[in-house]
Amino acid sequence: MPTPSEMVRAVESELLELQERLCREFEACDGSARFREDAWTRAEGGGGRTRVIEDGAVFGKGGVNFSHVTGASLPAAASARRPELAGRGFQALGVSVVMHPVNPYVPTSHANIRFFIAEKPGAEPVWWFGGGFDLTPVYPYDEDCMAWHRTARDLCAPFGDEVYPAHKAWCDEYFHLKHRGETRGIGGLFFDDLNEWGFERCFDYWKAVGHGYGDAYVPIVQRRKATPYGERQLDFQRYRRGRYVEFNLVYDRGTLFGLQSDGRTESILMSLPPIAHWRYDYRPEPGSPEAALADYLKPRDWLSGASADEP
Amino acid sequence: MPTPSEMVRAVESELLELQERLCREFEACDGSARFREDAWTRAEGGGGRTRVIEDGAVFGKGGVNFSHVTGASLPAAASARRPELAGRGFQALGVSVVMHPVNPYVPTSHANIRFFIAEKPGAEPVWWFGGGFDLTPVYPYDEDCMAWHRTARDLCAPFGDEVYPAHKAWCDEYFHLKHRGETRGIGGLFFDDLNEWGFERCFDYWKAVGHGYGDAYVPIVQRRKATPYGERQLDFQRYRRGRYVEFNLVYDRGTLFGLQSDGRTESILMSLPPIAHWRYDYRPEPGSPEAALADYLKPRDWLSGASADEP
Image 1 (tube, rainbow over the protein chains, first blue to last red):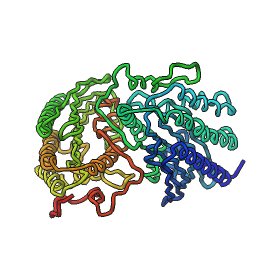
Image 2 (image 1 turned 90 degrees about the vertical axis):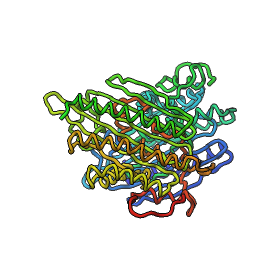
Image 3 (image 1 turned 45 degrees about the vertical axis):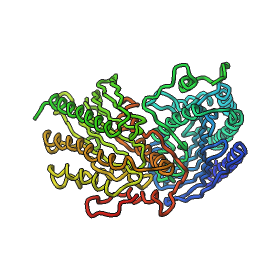
Image 4 (image 1 turned 180 degrees about the vertical axis):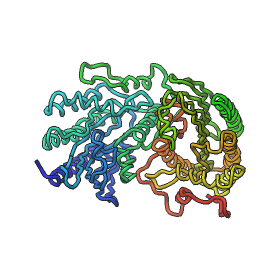
């Protein structure tokens, strides 16, 4: 078993590599805008490397952010299952990604992989991994949803048949807007507090999740980025982005952890879309492509069978 | 001392009257759009009368919402100071107002007045009033800020010299975006858990706050609604509206209470602006009118002295 510093070094090097890979691929996809980088430090300890892309041909706003923060007292939002660790000294490392495309036919995507280690003099260090990715289409294509979930299932397979169903269900449960009675999108994977497989195996799974995100998302962007759209589709996209804002500010534990731990606000809130609309009691016309989205905002089995594919 | 049902009847009738008055005056101000009304009921008990105005000449989006909800178990967010009442049966009555004007020179305003009564068999009923109003300018005029606070002070005066300073300070403290290090706007009044003056006096103060809001806001709207503006001012308005969304979804106790008590989501979230922008790490040009706003987002004494008045 590696020491805490060995773990942190291995995790950090993996995160920086993933950040590089994703930025390179997203820039290639975009073909126009480049990520700008802001390195930052945090008074209490640690810092990060925020990379943001804006006003691209394909991506309106997106971020691929690395951070490694240390603190004297773990905030409650850091661990769902280990409230007894709140108050310990900690290190938290992660990469967070949110990509908001320009074209309403290209889904927004999110990924986060993170590692925590909480230490206290005279006690065993406690570490765990968390992560996942999820897809938020505005005009969903079944083909994309199925491919997204197949990639998720395939990367989980080497770690046991129960992993995909468990982490898929956790994702559906986590990305749920209770006050709207709908999920944020079509899900993917979500896990937290993972350490029961031992460090090496957990680390391997966690790496597979980070890279699986890129493998799953890039082909969808390529497939849809040239789809023609108009003002109607943009309007609905802006309306749906309001829901994205609602989820991130009301429910998202990563956002709350960041704000509670005096994180860098601009890096945390890069997840918010470039523009969002709210219209009182808006209801899409029955039978319209906009109304069809509701069916996608309930947990669904995306691996069995195929169906029609026109938004 | 009135019985609980007498209190509820008096409070309800006052709230409905205030709703009428504000809608009438805002429609007159707007000159074009009208409020639409949605009456709603809530499975657990009670309901409301939501009135929303959209796409007006003066108001882009606004709501003047009455609600009277009853429940078997008071949510924790309902009372800051009385956590021991959580779980009691309750009635909550209130009017909530948020007005988002079209013109960036006209400030957004918010008011809320509410009354709670929590009952339990074999125990004394506990009741309290809460309320207040606050102003969120994009391009502030000192004249407006001073007039707003003078109206606040004057309505407080009959209830004691300490009321305005105390409730003004409470407002500055409440409408504070910790993660941004700024207030939501230039404040006003805020109070909660008010019952120590006895029912009649509390009720009188609370009515004065509700009507004082209309008295303070309407003249500001009239004064600024014809000010010429362009795309630059609209851009900054949309950016600042992002902060409004951040406050309401991350911090606002009324919003949390509504969502926790399975309130009517569309009525609760009518407070969100019609449109909001987020731009990574945006900073206004030093010396610009946009940069000048920062000075207004710190608590300030608005009653002493005058100063220049050009945004």
